[in-house]
Length: 87
Image (cartoon, rainbow, N blue to C red; front, side, top):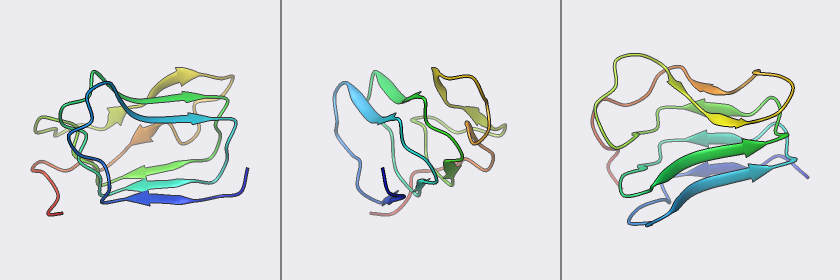
């Protein structure tokens, strides 16, 4: 799949926040994953960039993105937001 960018779009979703499957070089940034049971999940997605997302509570440490693949490259939001993004 071609690279894409997801930002400022996710709110009030009840189950999945974002699901990426077999996709590379995506940018996922400035989203609010608030009411999601599973905030983010990746299957065989590589070199995706995760940054400045709000994960439903204040975070000081990087947020690990759960998923299934052979590599961990691009599977952390290194700079999660402490407060929700303004949408």
